[in-house]
Length: 330
Image (cartoon, rainbow, N blue to C red):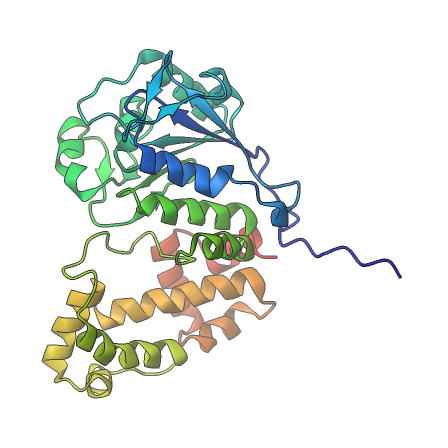
């Protein structure tokens, strides 16, 4: 018997324009550019023929030098931006570095015809110069927040998040947050299974919510404290529908409630209640995308009532569970 074809992990609904174009410029931020290539430019035969297509567009004549002494030879010029479904700005030369008018024009034309435009770290200043962020929410690396606000007071700058997805314009915080935003975009386009596959190959977390703090007091907790907080985190993850009081969690960590709250926030950047809410909402999104269960059943499985789920879901994602399932469900 002939071997049956392997099941594709890509959904039936695909982005209408799969061409991703990353900009290249003299002084290129090589890490941010590498993020774009790693996410969208690597061959991924396991994804089949409907995966992204990728190209690099030079915004100016060469030679283009990247940080670290490398030189970049692009696939073409700004004409590629005219064809793109997604345009990525991988950093910029500086907050006060002028943005060439031809690039501004190309981005504005691409955006008007429906292309998505995404910035990583300081690339936000290019989008701002093109007027694509006026009146919108956006973020950037915490070091650039004050200058972005000063230069562009009409932008609603969110200083303490990993990324902002405004639909057709997306911005990420520091360089590594570009990975989070890129994986989020893969999830939007192709669903959680594809995003998880890409993350696994990157050896990266498959999903960090955009609202997660980009800076915490102690990013890597000391060993003995990590071991003490671990049981409390696993206790919540293992029973998302359960009632988790601070007293019980502190007991699991062998701490007083006051000490537990202080050390939990220092290690995670948030409170136990907010951490649990984020975990519950992440689980709800997974179930809406992959499970045939009804919304009320999904709500109950993570400890929400249906009304509470709708409230928190709309507050966090600006949509309803039903609308999210209609868009992303398999």
